[in-house]
Image (cartoon, rainbow, N blue to C red):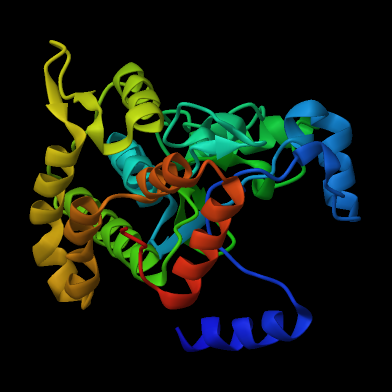
Length: 302
């Protein structure tokens, strides 16, 4: 919070306002200037329209991991819970001055890139290396930095990087989601170390559940098994928090993790934004509320 205050001191002096959210409600992507860097010029030249409309903003969380083999196993396990993280962070109902009908349109916009979205289900670290070598040799990418999966190993940092989350408007919400991700990675990592069964949904179940999370957030019913049985996503989240709470306590992040319950109780960002627009009919009012939430570290509930 101290660093945010320092940032706001600078932006206030410059006459700028700051918010953290998955998409800007009304800014037009076609009117934005692209940062003049070789990397971005190459991205736009290669991907064209999908890259030009990337006026989206996310929260990425890195958690240290001991080995490449473990990183692959834990990343595979995390895919089961990516819909939970997307639903909890959903903050992008509006794009280009329109209601998309989604809780997170950012996730669908990002998926249009050739190396974005859900990761491949890899067998081991050697297969990950083979994939990277193939893509670099084929000039599909230049480095791991151009693999934009929802979760990926990051060899440079020695981490697992979770990238699925929309921008979160308050620091408390960022900390809650970060604590959940950290506890999840450690919880799955300990299962790997002990040779225990790791929860792992089929890829097609994860894909469908991600779509439902993007559309309905925590109000979605997600698939829990191959028989097609369903569970409310918010109820599944509550159970998941209970499951990883002992890990969070050991890590010193329990207080932050328990804020997940508060987020579910007070209403997530996409709902707060829609309520403000329904009351005002004004996208600038939505943006002003997001700026205020970031500044005050508190959701606007009424």
